[in-house]
Length: 332
Ligand SMILES: NC(=O)c1ccc[n+]([C@@H]2O[C@H](COP(=O)([O-])OP(=O)(O)OC[C@H]3O[C@@H](n4cnc5c(N)ncnc54)[C@H](O)[C@@H]3O)[C@@H](O)[C@H]2O)c1
Image (cartoon, rainbow, N blue to C red; front, side, top):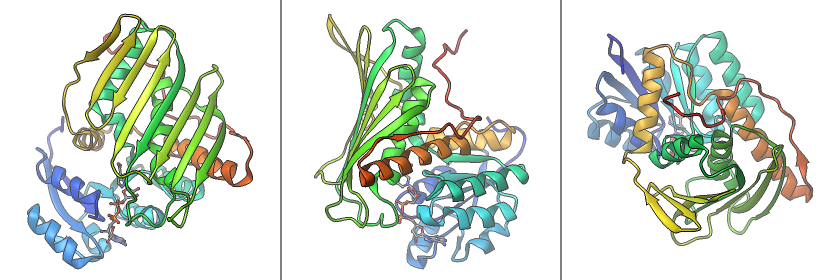
């Protein structure tokens, strides 16, 4: 819900992901998409005309229009530079995941957003998948006992355009964030195996995470598949729960068989962007904050170190302000 005023939104980087941000803002009540920017003129002009907004080749010229809410969806290695510039123009930021290419650059964005008193939200989209919302509510009921194991699989063909990040930084970060979001806890150690067949960095990885309460999680990602598949399996004391992210489905398995639980439908990115605009318009705390991304980046960089040095890496607890909370019933 937006109080009283129209929020001016902008998108910097309208490639594969940013174009969807532009589409959603252009149709959102209470939001005026004041412009988009991309160094690719042909694409920028096409996106602007499609969504009835203005194209700016230079991001700074767009920022001079003083947008309140800016999505940054340029390649990850440019997030810090563009975020820095947007904060100079007092913009509130939604930075696509991962927040930056390393923790040093991520901390720099966080510190500047804090000192400028601007909203900083990170685009960990799966938190806004309606199947995850249903799962979180189910876990809060506590009827299936404690979580024992978690395994995730996220595979696809090779995305040619991603050339500044390996699959661990680019893809595994979705599930690493989600596991902490679901369990309310952070991993204590990580070990990983990875392959590099045709990408500059690793293009297939299997990451094992250990948590203090005995939970083990395995996060598998690959760019070697001819199709997309994204799922999460939770093993609990009294059964198992399977989430299919693409179908937005939730299935419970127990001794009586399998039951499909109805999940309301909704586009995760649209739910995420409504949450961002609500945060900006109503001065709320960011639902996915910078410190969540620091944790994720710490795990992903440790996973890379683990596979390169062939050893388990202990994780220090470097953040205190995460949004990870154990599931609780919304009505209590
Ligand atoms: N949340 C998700 O599920 C998800 C999915 C895909 C990508 N992403 C993230 O979104 C970001 C972009 O990824 P993508 O797949 O859209 O990449 P992409 O290469 O398709 O798009 C990036 C766009 O940024 C433009 N660009 C580059 N430098 C620029 C600059 N200085 N100013 C303005 N525009 C500039 C490029 O021309 C391109 O159009 C990455 O951080 C990626 O990790 C998130």
